Length: 92
Image 1 (tube, rainbow, N blue to C red):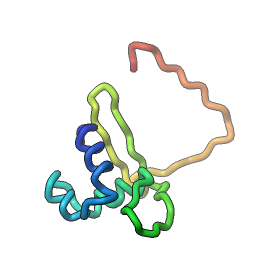
Image 2: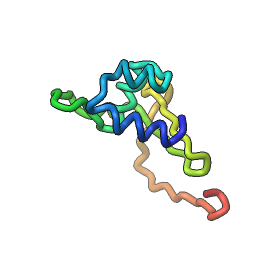
Image 3: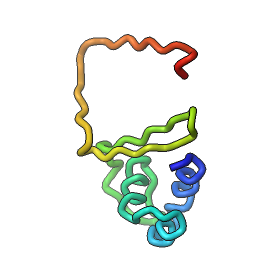
């Protein structure tokens, strides 16, 4: 999904019914709710359990696309070793 669509969904989510957003953008209601929960966006005036930390939202600045991965499609491993990242300017 393009970043402008993602930004519009996140802006509309607190006050607009999820079904209406889903119909407008052609995305399932469940996907929109999980995406919003992952980003810490909640419906206005409702209580919530807390942010869903198992899902990952990835933004590709080169293509201006937002990708979403559910927590069951990857495994997070925690390493106690320091990691040195080497990224060249050409790779960005």
